[in-house]
Length: 365
Image (tube, rainbow, N blue to C red; front, top):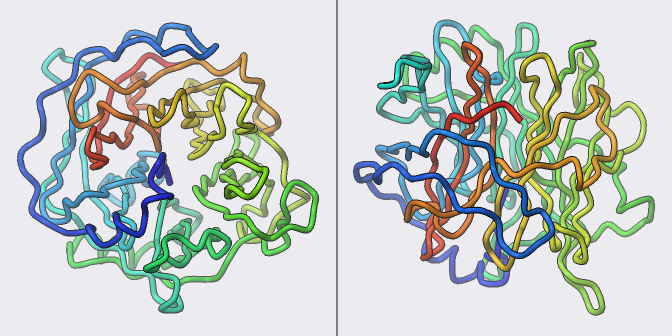
């Protein structure tokens, strides 16, 4: 859930939240510029220009947090992306097809399919960062839920959630286009404390469920430590091993992956992890702040059992710039592999703090 500089002004932003019909996509972008003044100054790999995804009926100011459902693999006979607008979730179908250069591309279908989450208290009106996975005969939805109100975001209320529904029901309801209906099963990791202490004044957001080649399951996520007197705003990427038969059950404590310390290259923000197997290697993508608001995406091949990733291992793969809709920041990346090509799905923020979704074909990190 990349909010970048939004939390301090969220009261105003909530009041401006709206739904409207989308217009046609923006022109494709040119290759993004190099990084700014921080220490991560390596060039991003050569990649195809970014393309914006047109959203037909739910386009508003905050179209965010996209991910490939089921890691981009078909669910039944269809493939989907999933995304949100801070209060609701949606599916959108796509196909893998040849692009104009003859290489695999992504063709997005018209229309969005609502995702309904039943069983949440009315106070949990903020829904962020959805991820859909197939687990046996169930489809599971991992997401963040908490309270947003006239005074802004109640950060300590935000926790990781899991909802699920039968696979056969998901296939039928998604094909109908009228909406899919998940049942919330509750929060994950209620034993979580902040960095080994007892402080509960933190948020848990951005879930990413991953099963490694050995069949071990992990949940990666972001811990947000709000600013306090004498302490700056900080976000950290963490991981916990979970029971693949019941991902709500943690196996062991949380493990630090990337620290967002304010004096690090991430300048207080390391968030929105996506862990996916590419070319047989577990590969971690993370959104990182390179300056005041210009978020960018870094990646690194990592161990199949997630642990601390040094900053020196992270390479830039996506940076803001080159097109108006992603001129201010890019992040919340999700990756998939199709016919030897790697695709990134992500959100862009323009100079007016409006968000759109886009995708890009890149070289494997």
